[in-house]
Image 1 (cartoon, rainbow, N blue to C red):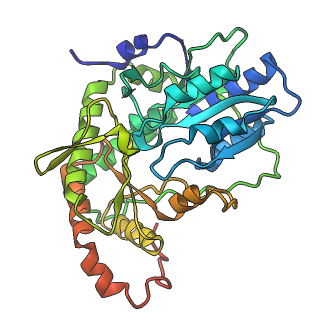
Image 2: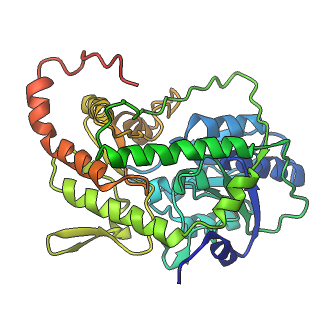
Image 3: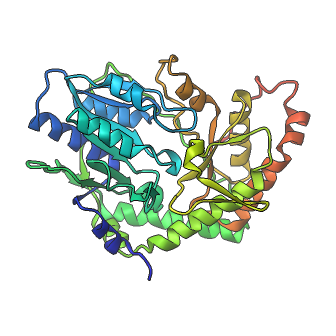
Length: 386
């Protein structure tokens, strides 16, 4: 039986709240915590490897961030997190990076012991589990992004599994359904274009996300929005099992195409998580994991070269959040990610031709590097690439 979103939401014990984007839900949770249990100087413990927009949310809510460095395999040092908690801490925030589960059960014990809440960021995963438990059922406040995982124009939702008397979304506006329709239409047209061109990009439509910036001394604020009527209606019809199956198939295809390449490192979480299984010469993502992307790390000077050259052949790749750690270079793991991490796209909108082109490019890269980069890689101009 297919798993549609309207049925999936029944798996969670808490209440659902729909938002225009997931970060707006994060803001409302922080404001509710401070209203319910005021602190003179509230803080939140969270990883420094985050997008600038989440940093802005923390500042807009009047909180001080107390940053911890994620581990080099995108997990969490539990002792480091607990050492940052003090009497002014309202919550701990954790991220399931790229679909790799964070140790939420251990973090939940920490937050319970310190009588604060755990905010679980599931923006990079959906219908996934950790130690047999569904991600999104463990934390107290859960953020999901339908924009990221379901390729919708906007949309996110919040689940509150904890006692949340007095919580109320602070919506000021609603995302317009016309905007949703236009953005969704463009996405579908681009997917058709990629299918017709067999992954080629003669119109140069592929693009690289811009790096966000933040001035911590500015006054930050947000206009909290509801999800559009069209987005909410469409969301209820999405076959999640089909989406997840496609993401996993794409991940496994790319994984097996690049697994022997020694110039890049596949990031798959702590060894004990055993996320990648082996069957003969074939590798695959274990059951219960829904990936957002396939993250790899490359030498610092090579990452941006690969990223821009993939864009030239029609493959737009993210790079985590290059703006982190926001000038705080003592966070060595996040500094490394900001300079060396590349997210290979494996979402359901990718067709086989695009995946094949990406794998073939990466396989042929050592020869390209030897031919083009050995003399002047550092100074190569990347101007004109969008």
